[in-house]
Length: 207
Ligand code: GRF
Image 1 (cartoon, rainbow, N blue to C red):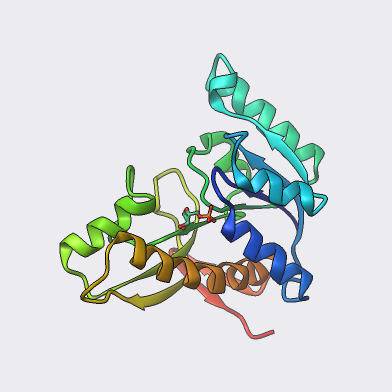
Image 2: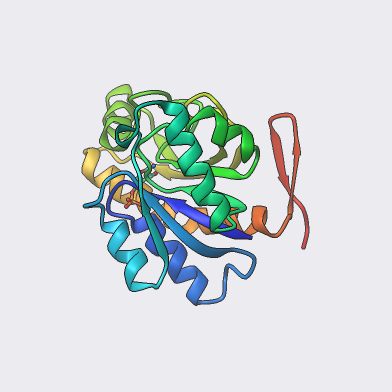
């Protein structure tokens, strides 16, 4: 499947996907486009140095959400994008795009949903909340995107411990490592058609 990666920041998840692609672990996904709202995002440089087309687009560039959605939709269509992977993307996708790519948009969240998710729960906010709550485990959730923040069906989760001396930074580093181990597996399974979706339940089929 032709895949677009949306990223707003450093893009370490994007890099991990590119590395897995190079080592042959992602035969069913081709990364053809990187989309970002922040032109300074490190993800742009990672795309360029891997010869991947980029699109800098933000809702603020448009007068209406409809105009933004139309431009984004036509760019995705022009690039033949079939699958979208959000990798640290800080903007909500327009409902028209979510509808167009139903069960074809994945997101990675640095926590175990449905806990510590929803609007405002991103980056270090998640890790601080986990530590303040006193949770003993955190982790990663890869899920399909629907119209609500951090809500679509869960594809894959990976648990990491919260240690007594953790701060948001040390927990973030442990979770990020798990993210890098997790995301490519979910993307490859979806791209290969190796999953079954029944209601909210996503199961992996044997290859
Ligand atoms: C990751 O923690 C991801 O779970 C979240 O945003 C962060 C992006 O990190 N959605 P990076 O830009 O991939 O390094």
